[in-house]
Structure formats: structure tokens, C-alpha cells
Length: 202
Image (cartoon, rainbow, N blue to C red; front, side, top):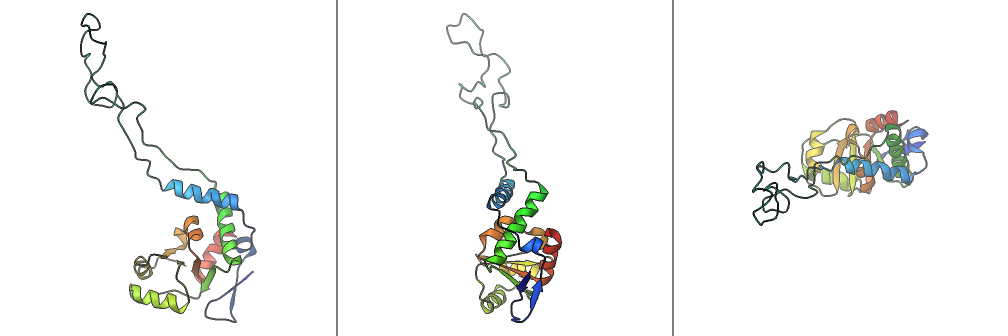
């Protein structure tokens, strides 16, 4: 399979069909997106049940003869300051997905991006300084607005410049995730990054 190199009409980049020419598996992509988003949930909600609330070791009054209802602890959920019934506890929201399935989902996403002409390949994408204005000029020149920029390695200048723009993001190959690939209208990738992706998915 060949992908057009932006800015050079006659030049194309050869990529493996195994990585960029697969059929779209919506169910598998959905699983990968759900797994990624579930992994981002903190699950730190916590409340105290009657055993976790401080105090309440002594029986408030004797069992019989007082005329009052029997009570075993002042930390009963029925009492003010007591524990909570069915208290929430920290939980792990992670949804497991096998490595083979995840790679299959990423192949499916990249193949669909290529089919829909949403995958733009560039020789390089660099900034001399971390200035948002410079990045905006580059994007306008390439007719890009809603875009995820993928580079082979972490580029601090590009990352700092992109973070000020609401619908622009930049990351290296190691930080690619299915949610970002699906969310952006266009995905701009450098040739070096494309080769890394091909090695990973092919």
C-alpha cells in the first residue's frame, strides 16, 4: 500500500498492508476505546462503614432493663456519626483487553484513517521554538485545524506549542492511544513515526 507524502505530490511512502489495509472491525475498536477510557478512571471514591468509623467499642447501655431499644455501638449506621450502610470502597475500573486484540484494533483504526484520507504523512514536523503562533502558521499552510500530530520521538517544542490550541495535540509513537486517533478529524504523522507504527503493527 502507498500513502501520499504531503507537500510532495509525486512522492509516496510504501507501507505494509498488514498494518494499513485491514478491514474495519467496529466491535474490536469499541473494546479498545472502552478499555483505554476505563483505565483512566481513578476509582478513589470511599466511605466508612461501621467498622471503619472511630469509636464505638463500648456498648452504650446494658441490654435489658433501661426501657430503650437495645444498642451495641454508638457507630451503628442508625446513629448520628455512625458508619454508612453499603459504604463505597476504592475499586479498580480497568477493563482487560489482550495485547493481540489491542494491536488488531489499532490496525483497524489506522486502516480506516487511511481509507478516509484522514491520515496525512509529512517528511518532518518541527518547530525551532515552542511558539503557538509558529505552529498555527504551519497548520494553516497544510490546511489542518483539528489534528493529532504524531512524531517518532518526544518533541518538547511541538508539545508546548500544541497545548495552547483546543483541537490540536502532539505525541510520540509510544504515547498513541485509540481515543485520540478516533477523536481528531486528521492525524498527521511523520515518515519516521509511520515506520515505527508499521513495525509495531505489521
